[in-house]
Figure (spheres, rainbow, N blue to C red):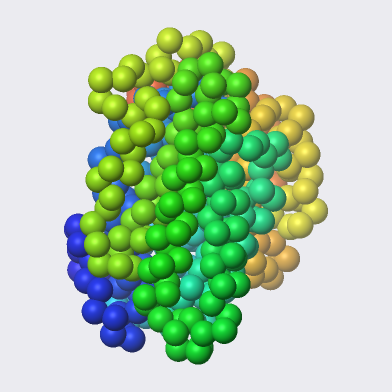
Length: 358
């Protein structure tokens, strides 16, 4: 699929209206926006852990989604494209923020399964499902985060959807209507991002907004720009506290207790998934568990993405390894960004997992 870097085409032709090409252009523009702003997103990343990697995690997760779309035919439906992108994003998600953006994409894809194009009614339905999926995935959801922005986006889309019910069906499903909905979503989520500073004590004390929420705002603005054939709003982050280049990296002065982030994909039965969530909540925090798909294999299992913060990696792996072979396993020290240490930990744990199941 051909990459469109800055101003996606907006012909309004039916084959271009929310097709696979539009999904690709949206996510590629979001990837570019997150990449260009990853340093500042990292700089204000202090919740739930001040480890300064939210921007990087969002960027790499969305980049995984766009890479997968290179294998999708341009004539594919929007549903096929978004499902492919979401599956790749979940399988390769990084961090809390990356996992949540992947959960959102996965839920957005559900109502588009048999739809050839993205429309305002389908976007409204997808955002409602994304909101529910994101809250369900977290064991300890918090306001003032990406969840709040998803709530705002879903409510805005639902309200706008309700206001157009008297329009003819072709008008409800037009690209113009979709563009208006995305514009309203950006307007309200921008206000919601600014408000996150007042919703979490850590953010209020540091006088910054939530990094993940800000990244999600950029993703929504990329959708607006793609649908309307415009550029990203160059002023959208101007009023965001802590986002100017001369502002300090606030996380650098904060202590991070020695801890590790463990992430992997594996096949689980419903009972094993529930049991694992309980166990991970007992040994760690920031637990996120979400199904990557809903199709059971011959053993009655489905594929899950698992995320947890623990004091020691073995605390999590003792619970995970007996349940199956892990894939895309990543173990990252939260208290340091030393690449060699991260690679060593991943290699060691992957070998341990392989030996246990050999």
